[in-house]
Image (cartoon, rainbow, N blue to C red; front, side):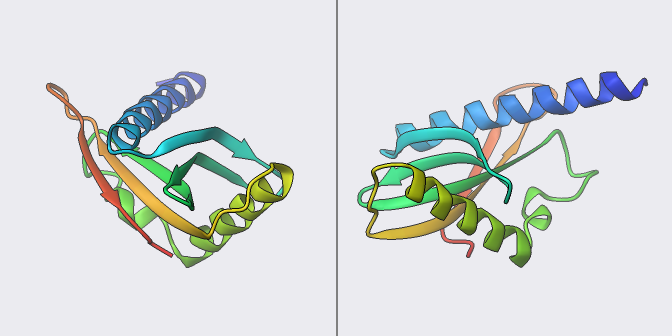
Amino acid sequence: MEERQKDRRKQGLGAYGESVAARHLTTGGMVLLDRNFSTATGEVDLLLRDGDVLVACEVKTRTGDTGGLPHEAVDNAKVARLRRVAEEWVASHVAEPRDLRVDLVAVIRPPKGRALVEHVRGIG
């Protein structure tokens, strides 16, 4: 398969996962504030408000377990970078959250049926 086609497929899968995750989290009561906020430090997929807590959410989407579990793709350095980008978001917006939390939403898109979604709160 051509590289550009692989890149488009990966981007499409990522966008799908972010949409599924946003819907899952907002249905659960969170308020979506921003998507794909990026700075020179990095990018946060979703920024949400959970009560008076700002949540920086990393979304990892897979079609199976061949590339490893989504949880395995987020290490301590990634969590620290997500936290820094979220702090930059706070500095650039009129926001004073009581706390900042980093969450992970793992989305598995099976060949048929609904996506499987797991929300892990407070990964770092």
